[in-house]
Image 1 (cartoon, helix red, strand yellow):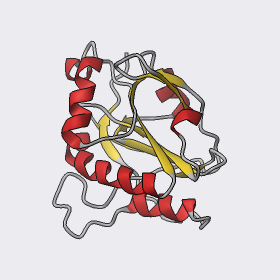
Image 2 (cartoon, helix red, strand yellow):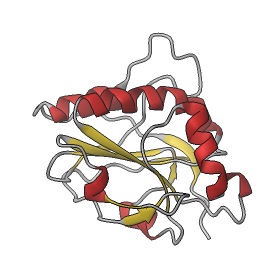
Image 3 (cartoon, one colour):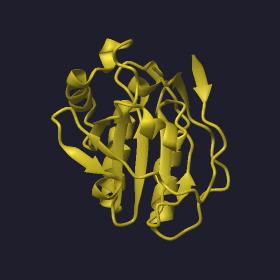
Image 4 (cartoon, helix red, strand yellow):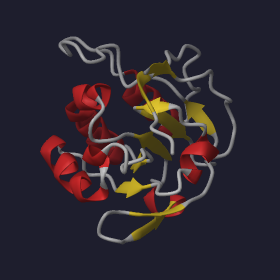
Amino acid sequence: MLLETPAPEFGSKAPDFTLKDPSGHAFTLSDVAGPKGILVAFICNHCPYVIGIANRLAQDINTLRDAGIGTVLINANDYRAYPQDAPEHMPAFAKKHGLIAPYLIDETQEIAHAYGAVCTPDFFGYDTNFELQYRGRLDNAGRGDASGRAAELRDAMIAIANGQQRPDTQVPSMGCSLKWR
């Protein structure tokens, strides 16, 4: 089912978490945050919307890292119903697309609920105070041709990292519904 993200609640605090990657290493929100902010992205392995943007997301994560913004990728899908999203497949997906950020498992889906995530991909951009400044799409290309794309999320997060105001206009992300238990 195709969903769009709801309107953002700017200034809301990022819920803290402790989640593990497929190797069993635990990460907290503070562990993955950069000195100038954090991007929390809910993704999965099988969603065609995630697959369609994964390589561009990887490029933007690298650019954000260089700007002092950390990124964490969270898979909250019910992988028992969607085996492609199982933890054992997450490292290969990340490697295939060049995703260097920690890719964590939200086994209980508690963190996805706490953030209000609704689809994959779903992006939450926070400033240094862990206050929400961006909730929108990656760019204007969607799953289509990315030549001449407007990198909306990347540009917004770099502006926020540089102390500028968040963009007034933020277009919702859209993708497959999260697969709830």
